[in-house]
Length: 137
Image (cartoon, rainbow, N blue to C red; front, side, top):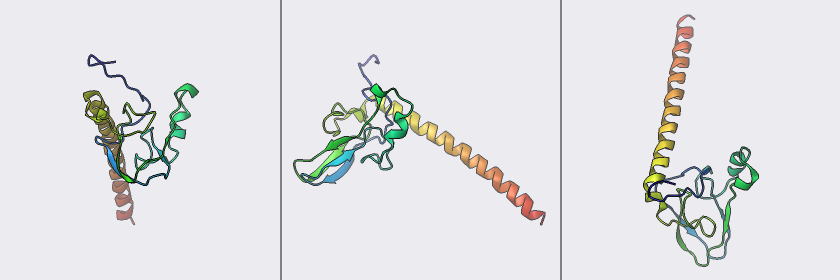
């Protein structure tokens, strides 16, 4: 907990975005909403939580949330995966604007950027090697 009283209610989840996802949902049609933040679109479960759960004690497993809208409309689904409505609807409650959540998101982006930079450097080395090989032909 920080000085501001922030408690990370979903510590193993990835922040999937800095703002909620606007999603059109149909009344009475159930959907499975992602709570781990690792699904391809960050909104609907694609089973990605299973890989995360492999390294967690069973009591800490992340599971999707089945949500059945009562009316057809645009819903604003939590992207930060820290909403206070994590257990009921997964709808945005503004938690993404908390400095702790923004800091988590920024750290994730920096880590991803570093990984991409390393991959770019490795690819540049491979291209240079291939060019040397082709020049020798």
